[in-house]
Image: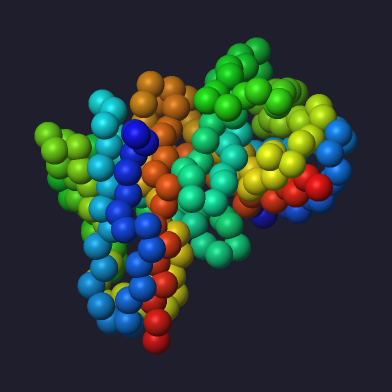
Length: 114
Length: 107
C-alpha cells in the first residue's frame, strides 16, 4: 500500500459543487501539504500544516479550505468549484525533523470542473 | 520571473544518449531536490543536494551553490527514463518547484 494515499484519484464535477479531496499517510510525518499542478507551471502550494493545530495558507489558497483531522489525515475542500480549479492535485508529507528534507507525494487527484 | 527555472522544457533523445537537464534558482536555499514524475502522475524523489555531486545508478546530480545552478545528468538513456523531471528548492517553509522538463527517450 502507498504511504500517502489520495482519494478520489479522478473526479469530474460541475461548477458550484462542493468537492473534498482526502489525503491519508502512514509515514508518521507531522508536515502535510496540498499542491496543485497545471500544465506548463510548477507545483504550487495551496495549504500546509505542521501539526493538527497548525494550518497555514500557501501561495494560492483562495477558493480552497483544509482540515487536519488527525496527524495522518489532511483534507482539501473546494466549497464552490469553478472551471479554473481544474488541475492535478497532490498531497505530500515531510518529516518535521528534516526541515529541508524529502517530500513524499500521493499519486495525485485529477479534478475536472465543467 | 519564476524563482526556479528549468531548461529545456522538452527534450527528445535516442536511446543511449547522454542527457543533461538544467536548473537555476534565485532564492537562497539549504537544499535542492530533483524529482521524477511518470506519465501516470506519481512523483518520486531522486536526489536531495546541498553541495557537490550525487550519483545513483545512471543518474548524476550536481549543484553549484555560488552560481545557484544544478544539473541532472542521465547516462546511457533508456526509454524507461521518459518522464517529467522537476527541480525544487526549499525556501523557508515552502518548496518552490520548476515547471519541469519533459524527457522522451526513443528506442
